[in-house]
Amino acid sequence: MNKPAVFLTATLLFFCTVLTAQARPVRVIMLDFADETGGAADIGLTGPIDTRAFAAKGPHFLQTALLSSPDFMLIDRRDFIRQIEKIQPRDGSDPVSDTFFATRERPGPLGPTFFNAARTLKGDALIRGSLLSLSTSRQNINQGGYQTAFITLNLRVMLQALDTLNGSVIAAKEGRAERKIRQTSGVQTEIGEDELLDLYQSAIESAVAEIKTQLKVRVNLDSNVKIWLSTSADPAMIELDGILLGSSPIEGVEVLRGDHTLTVTRPGYETISKKLMLESDMKISVPMISNQLSAEERKKALSNMNLRLLKIN
Image (tube, rainbow, N blue to C red; front, side, top):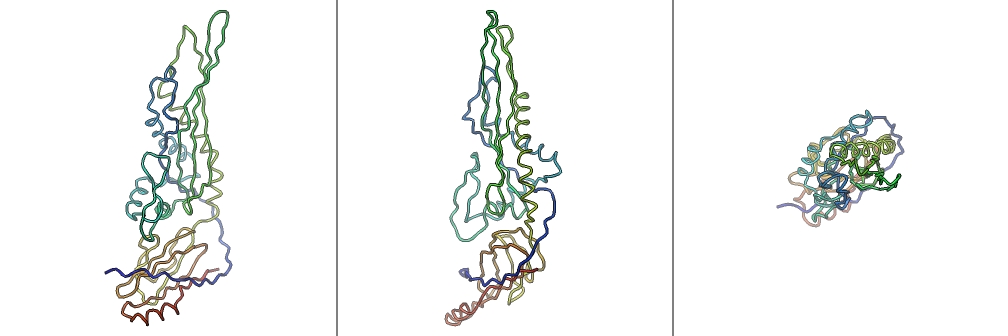
């Protein structure tokens, strides 16, 4: 029979510390691209296009653009999906397929979220993309009785980078590419898929160049901290955001800065579950309560107990 989680009020002892930023590649997880064009395209110029299938090719070009720069390191999307399945997020939002990073709420008690999976893999940012438009502009000119059309094929994409710590948007940039085409009564040009893909790649590359600086600033804030954790009943099983860290005492384990859920369990003791904001290296001491205590003894123990957090210089 599972014991109810005990939610403890933390007493915080703060001592100022300065963490030195270290330049390193931005660890990125790519999400799918969405089709925001509404399926519109100039059929006479491009032929029939499945814009949804076309948009889905965006991650390939995004991957190529990111890997061509030493400022980025890619996390395998298969590892990311496996991590989501492993931790089974219950209290936050997670992706809904075939949408532009839409989310649904999943009911349940405290548990890891979609972004916890990214943090577990030490990701700095999630990048999502959207094919915004694939359109044409046309200028018709009468030259000595001959009709000539000057057509510009425009392609626009949007890239957004999300902070894995809190889901906030770090950067949002549009990328554009175009090709100019001359059509006459004697010469009619139809653009093939390869030429459209070249435009798509150029637009994505221009957007990546724009967000690179903002992402590097994010990483240089130094998002890693270390924790030391012990309990009054070592050894106990320690989980952070639903991921097993090991048995206590925990010594100098590196985790990402930010909001986390700490869970401590040991047979014969109440389960301890506490949300923590880790902003620097931290020593954590967790008092444990035996589940063999009477109701009165348990009440007294809870009233005299504090989770102790000590920042380290």
